[in-house]
Image 1 (cartoon, rainbow, N blue to C red):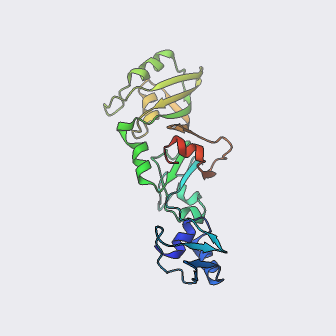
Image 2: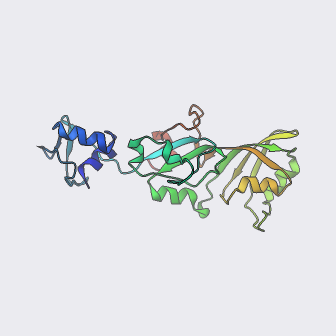
Length: 236
Protein backbone atom coordinates (compact mmCIF):
# COMPACT_ATOMS: atom_id res chain seq x y z
CA UNK A 1 0.00 0.00 0.00
CA UNK A 2 1.02 3.63 -0.32
CA UNK A 3 2.92 5.20 2.54
CA UNK A 4 0.42 8.05 2.91
CA UNK A 5 -2.40 5.50 3.34
CA UNK A 6 -0.44 3.72 6.08
CA UNK A 7 0.15 6.99 7.93
CA UNK A 8 -3.43 8.19 7.54
CA UNK A 9 -4.76 4.82 8.73
CA UNK A 10 -2.56 5.07 11.79
CA UNK A 11 -4.38 8.23 12.86
CA UNK A 12 -1.53 10.62 12.08
CA UNK A 13 -3.82 12.84 10.03
CA UNK A 14 -5.57 13.23 6.71
CA UNK A 15 -3.81 12.36 3.43
CA UNK A 16 -3.20 16.07 2.88
CA UNK A 17 -1.69 16.51 6.35
CA UNK A 18 0.41 13.37 5.93
CA UNK A 19 1.93 14.64 2.68
CA UNK A 20 2.98 17.86 4.40
CA UNK A 21 4.52 15.81 7.20
CA UNK A 22 6.46 13.64 4.77
CA UNK A 23 8.07 16.71 3.23
CA UNK A 24 9.66 17.55 6.58
CA UNK A 25 11.69 14.32 6.54
CA UNK A 26 10.14 13.07 9.78
CA UNK A 27 9.21 9.65 8.36
CA UNK A 28 11.52 6.70 7.79
CA UNK A 29 10.84 3.30 6.26
CA UNK A 30 13.19 0.55 7.38
CA UNK A 31 15.59 3.20 8.64
CA UNK A 32 15.64 5.33 5.48
CA UNK A 33 14.05 8.76 5.20
CA UNK A 34 11.15 8.79 2.76
CA UNK A 35 9.39 11.92 1.48
CA UNK A 36 7.42 10.36 -1.38
CA UNK A 37 3.79 9.61 -0.40
CA UNK A 38 3.49 7.08 -3.23
CA UNK A 39 6.18 4.73 -1.89
CA UNK A 40 4.75 1.22 -1.44
CA UNK A 41 5.00 -0.38 2.01
CA UNK A 42 3.95 -3.75 3.40
CA UNK A 43 2.35 -3.87 6.89
CA UNK A 44 3.70 -7.39 7.42
CA UNK A 45 7.28 -6.62 6.49
CA UNK A 46 8.16 -2.93 6.69
CA UNK A 47 8.87 -0.71 9.70
CA UNK A 48 7.54 2.84 9.47
CA UNK A 49 8.79 5.40 12.00
CA UNK A 50 7.66 8.95 12.73
CA UNK A 51 10.11 11.08 14.75
CA UNK A 52 11.84 7.79 15.68
CA UNK A 53 8.60 6.30 17.05
CA UNK A 54 7.05 3.25 15.35
CA UNK A 55 3.78 3.83 13.49
CA UNK A 56 1.37 0.90 13.61
CA UNK A 57 -0.89 0.35 10.62
CA UNK A 58 -4.60 0.13 11.41
CA UNK A 59 -6.85 -1.58 8.90
CA UNK A 60 -10.30 -1.25 10.48
CA UNK A 61 -12.20 1.51 12.21
CA UNK A 62 -15.23 1.17 14.47
CA UNK A 63 -17.41 4.18 15.25
CA UNK A 64 -20.51 4.87 17.34
CA UNK A 65 -22.71 7.77 16.23
CA UNK A 66 -25.75 9.39 17.79
CA UNK A 67 -27.52 9.88 14.48
CA UNK A 68 -29.73 12.96 14.23
CA UNK A 69 -33.02 13.12 12.38
CA UNK A 70 -32.81 14.50 8.86
CA UNK A 71 -29.59 12.64 8.01
CA UNK A 72 -29.68 9.45 5.97
CA UNK A 73 -27.83 6.22 6.68
CA UNK A 74 -25.85 6.04 3.46
CA UNK A 75 -22.32 6.63 2.23
CA UNK A 76 -23.38 9.21 -0.35
CA UNK A 77 -26.49 10.92 -1.64
CA UNK A 78 -27.08 13.62 -4.22
CA UNK A 79 -29.80 15.39 -2.22
CA UNK A 80 -29.54 14.70 1.50
CA UNK A 81 -26.79 14.93 4.08
CA UNK A 82 -25.44 11.50 4.99
CA UNK A 83 -23.91 10.10 8.17
CA UNK A 84 -20.55 10.01 6.35
CA UNK A 85 -20.79 13.79 5.87
CA UNK A 86 -20.74 14.12 9.67
CA UNK A 87 -17.32 12.45 9.95
CA UNK A 88 -14.03 14.32 9.93
CA UNK A 89 -11.60 13.81 7.08
CA UNK A 90 -9.39 11.37 8.96
CA UNK A 91 -12.28 8.99 9.66
CA UNK A 92 -13.76 9.38 6.18
CA UNK A 93 -10.41 8.26 4.83
CA UNK A 94 -11.12 4.73 6.12
CA UNK A 95 -14.26 4.63 3.93
CA UNK A 96 -16.59 3.34 6.66
CA UNK A 97 -20.21 2.44 5.99
CA UNK A 98 -23.22 2.40 8.31
CA UNK A 99 -24.02 -1.02 9.78
CA UNK A 100 -27.61 -1.34 8.66
CA UNK A 101 -29.74 1.75 8.47
CA UNK A 102 -31.87 4.08 10.52
CA UNK A 103 -34.75 5.87 8.81
CA UNK A 104 -34.13 9.51 7.94
CA UNK A 105 -36.34 10.74 10.78
CA UNK A 106 -35.00 8.22 13.35
CA UNK A 107 -32.35 9.14 15.90
CA UNK A 108 -29.90 7.19 17.98
CA UNK A 109 -27.25 4.52 17.85
CA UNK A 110 -25.61 3.86 14.52
CA UNK A 111 -22.43 1.85 14.14
CA UNK A 112 -20.07 2.63 11.26
CA UNK A 113 -17.12 0.51 10.16
CA UNK A 114 -15.10 -0.63 7.17
CA UNK A 115 -15.05 -4.17 8.62
CA UNK A 116 -17.34 -6.08 6.26
CA UNK A 117 -17.16 -9.26 8.32
CA UNK A 118 -18.51 -7.50 11.41
CA UNK A 119 -21.28 -5.82 9.40
CA UNK A 120 -22.33 -9.17 7.99
CA UNK A 121 -22.43 -10.73 11.45
CA UNK A 122 -24.53 -7.93 12.94
CA UNK A 123 -26.97 -7.80 10.02
CA UNK A 124 -27.31 -11.49 9.15
CA UNK A 125 -30.82 -12.77 10.03
CA UNK A 126 -29.39 -16.06 11.25
CA UNK A 127 -27.52 -14.35 14.09
CA UNK A 128 -30.67 -12.70 15.57
CA UNK A 129 -28.78 -9.65 16.85
CA UNK A 130 -31.19 -7.69 19.10
CA UNK A 131 -31.86 -4.01 18.55
CA UNK A 132 -33.67 -1.92 21.17
CA UNK A 133 -35.62 1.25 20.43
CA UNK A 134 -37.33 3.94 22.48
CA UNK A 135 -40.47 5.37 20.92
CA UNK A 136 -43.32 7.76 21.59
CA UNK A 137 -46.57 6.41 20.24
CA UNK A 138 -49.81 8.18 19.32
CA UNK A 139 -52.44 6.17 21.16
CA UNK A 140 -52.51 4.06 24.30
CA UNK A 141 -50.20 1.07 24.05
CA UNK A 142 -51.68 -1.86 25.97
CA UNK A 143 -50.61 -5.22 27.34
CA UNK A 144 -52.61 -6.72 24.48
CA UNK A 145 -50.21 -4.98 22.07
CA UNK A 146 -47.25 -6.37 24.03
CA UNK A 147 -48.75 -9.86 23.79
CA UNK A 148 -49.29 -9.44 20.04
CA UNK A 149 -45.71 -8.30 19.52
CA UNK A 150 -44.49 -11.29 21.53
CA UNK A 151 -46.25 -13.60 19.06
CA UNK A 152 -45.17 -11.60 16.01
CA UNK A 153 -47.48 -9.28 14.08
CA UNK A 154 -48.45 -9.28 10.42
CA UNK A 155 -47.21 -6.26 8.48
CA UNK A 156 -48.98 -4.52 5.62
CA UNK A 157 -47.28 -6.74 3.04
CA UNK A 158 -48.35 -9.96 4.77
CA UNK A 159 -45.01 -10.67 6.44
CA UNK A 160 -45.23 -11.95 10.01
CA UNK A 161 -42.46 -10.56 12.18
CA UNK A 162 -40.34 -12.52 14.58
CA UNK A 163 -41.29 -12.06 18.26
CA UNK A 164 -40.60 -8.61 19.72
CA UNK A 165 -40.25 -7.62 23.36
CA UNK A 166 -42.46 -4.58 24.01
CA UNK A 167 -42.07 -2.79 27.36
CA UNK A 168 -44.60 -0.07 28.19
CA UNK A 169 -42.96 2.85 29.97
CA UNK A 170 -45.89 5.27 29.95
CA UNK A 171 -49.52 4.86 28.92
CA UNK A 172 -51.84 7.58 27.70
CA UNK A 173 -52.91 9.41 24.57
CA UNK A 174 -49.18 9.46 23.86
CA UNK A 175 -47.46 6.34 25.15
CA UNK A 176 -43.76 5.69 25.64
CA UNK A 177 -42.25 2.28 25.05
CA UNK A 178 -39.09 0.30 24.52
CA UNK A 179 -39.12 -2.38 21.84
CA UNK A 180 -36.48 -5.02 21.18
CA UNK A 181 -36.51 -6.83 17.84
CA UNK A 182 -34.06 -9.17 16.11
CA UNK A 183 -34.65 -8.25 12.49
CA UNK A 184 -34.61 -5.08 10.43
CA UNK A 185 -37.33 -4.94 7.81
CA UNK A 186 -38.00 -1.62 6.07
CA UNK A 187 -39.68 0.80 8.56
CA UNK A 188 -40.26 -2.23 10.76
CA UNK A 189 -41.01 -0.54 14.09
CA UNK A 190 -43.41 1.92 12.48
CA UNK A 191 -45.17 -0.84 10.56
CA UNK A 192 -45.45 -3.04 13.64
CA UNK A 193 -47.33 -0.30 15.45
CA UNK A 194 -49.44 0.41 12.38
CA UNK A 195 -50.51 -3.24 12.52
CA UNK A 196 -52.10 -2.59 15.94
CA UNK A 197 -53.64 0.73 14.89
CA UNK A 198 -51.08 3.13 16.31
CA UNK A 199 -48.56 5.65 14.99
CA UNK A 200 -44.91 6.21 15.91
CA UNK A 201 -44.29 9.88 16.67
CA UNK A 202 -40.64 9.62 17.67
CA UNK A 203 -38.11 6.80 17.35
CA UNK A 204 -34.62 6.40 18.76
CA UNK A 205 -32.36 3.35 18.70
CA UNK A 206 -30.77 2.66 22.07
CA UNK A 207 -28.67 -0.43 21.46
CA UNK A 208 -27.47 -2.95 18.90
CA UNK A 209 -26.29 -6.28 20.18
CA UNK A 210 -24.48 -5.66 23.46
CA UNK A 211 -23.41 -2.12 22.51
CA UNK A 212 -25.49 0.71 24.00
CA UNK A 213 -25.64 4.32 22.85
CA UNK A 214 -23.33 6.62 24.81
CA UNK A 215 -25.77 9.20 26.16
CA UNK A 216 -22.94 11.74 26.41
CA UNK A 217 -22.86 11.91 22.61
CA UNK A 218 -24.90 14.84 21.36
CA UNK A 219 -26.96 14.39 18.21
CA UNK A 220 -24.57 14.26 15.27
CA UNK A 221 -21.55 13.43 17.43
CA UNK A 222 -19.60 10.21 17.25
CA UNK A 223 -16.59 8.48 18.77
CA UNK A 224 -14.53 5.36 18.27
CA UNK A 225 -15.69 2.26 20.10
CA UNK A 226 -13.87 1.51 23.34
CA UNK A 227 -11.88 -1.64 23.93
CA UNK A 228 -14.70 -2.95 26.13
CA UNK A 229 -17.25 -2.33 23.39
CA UNK A 230 -15.02 -4.09 20.86
CA UNK A 231 -14.85 -7.01 23.29
CA UNK A 232 -18.65 -7.12 23.32
CA UNK A 233 -18.58 -7.34 19.53
CA UNK A 234 -15.84 -9.98 19.61
CA UNK A 235 -13.38 -7.62 17.87
CA UNK A 236 -10.77 -6.96 20.55
